[in-house]
Length: 243
Image (cartoon, rainbow, N blue to C red):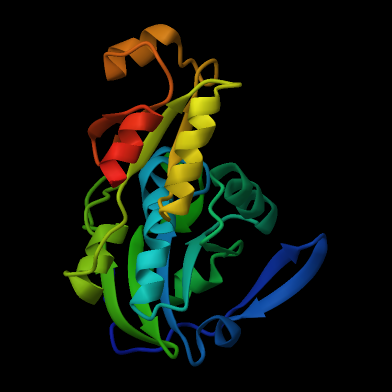
């Protein structure tokens, strides 16, 4: 059983990071002193759950957390700084601070270091999240001690529900586009003007075809805009939606 450390201070550790091709040591005091910080720790960079769900949702909700007074969101893993930097670039997670706990010192101090020898991982962090205020752990969500890699309570939505269950969340917007489409440009510009973040899925990229476009939207034209699972349509329909 992993121990809950609520009310205790975070371990005093120095992290060795690479920033702008220079070695930069970062201490826990620099990360936490006088700040309100969310930390989510996970087994490894580029691993499936971490890349598909855990990290992206924290990055997506970062503006909401900021409005709730959170100064920073830290993603921590027992990986070296080069791997963490590459993962941040791959995920385009500009709202997250990536901290490499390469030697596992912080995870060990948190009593969250576990053996993943059966996967060839060696020692890694157990999955958990916590809210740290001025270096003291106010709240900690620890995944249940069951086999495998449970992901039930350390997610971003659970943390946001703890901080403010009534916080307004951003709408999830997807735009299906194709290269050289002026109406796609118009729709994206309109979304930007309204302050909506969106993911763009371009035909011809990542296996998306015209057949996919028709199957998903029931239409054969671009753009096709979806907001919170509802198909809005093209640029003209998007203008009507906002009006």
